Image 1: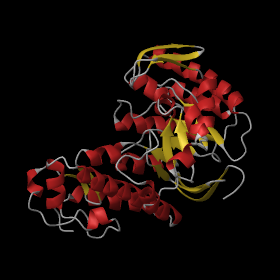
Image 2 (image 1 turned 45 degrees about the horizontal axis):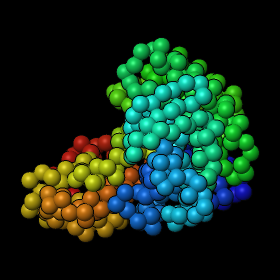
Image 3 (image 1 turned 90 degrees about the vertical axis):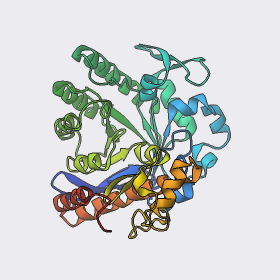
Length: 376
């Protein structure tokens, strides 16, 4: 741990990077997957469990936390770390994506965004400065600029307008953030699926000399190939010595291929959401526990896993819990999924250190291709 925000790269293999983000509240081993704790809870999990699985950092969301319980209340209660009993780093996203996807009657202009809450219909206004203020009251360690995210496919003119506004908002967010020792503000590259706009956004944000850079506006409806093309275009335009965060991504395959292109940090609701809906991620790929073929299958999800949810419960029992809509089913499958994701990240880090990342990718993908019916 350090008193300042630092990022050090210990090893590279091709474009894949093995590094460490050091902050006063702890170190983040990269490539890292951040479990999503949208409203101060990683759904269906105790945070002690999340830590034990290997998570160094979790994500919270400005939009949801500003609506309830409210940033002023969180600040009075000692900040988000104190409230949720997570003394390690927290990254908060700015709320821009949630305004796009959840809020009703949103109106965007240069000042910010006015929107109707999806909770109670109340009107709220969020400017770049207010987003940073809220994240400060939450006591977030890594704060994200407010940006405008455009769902793809979209017209190039709409993508360009949103990208240019996001750049102006980034500059305002940097000013509002000021100097917060030990903390960081990341800018967000936008530009949709238009290569020239991605390059322009990345270059302009790089000139702001921020402590880290996110790539946003992907995994919002485009095919994986488009996402990867945008990473190929964007990553070379970002400073080598700063961490790169791909927002809202993704599947295990997305992560493998994005690490190969130089991404250091990820977050996604997929492992927790899938677990609550009966889907497990395993070394042998995805397993849908709703399927009738699991009704009398006494095998565990993975007898080699260190996670009790994967190792100690039969598929028959998990199938029963899911079909009976028992809360325990979602809890166990979420536990399994987050364990798998953290194990995947640990394997990625080790493979980069050993200079065998391409081989690790192929071995991992081959295991998925074998399917869950193959002998464990």
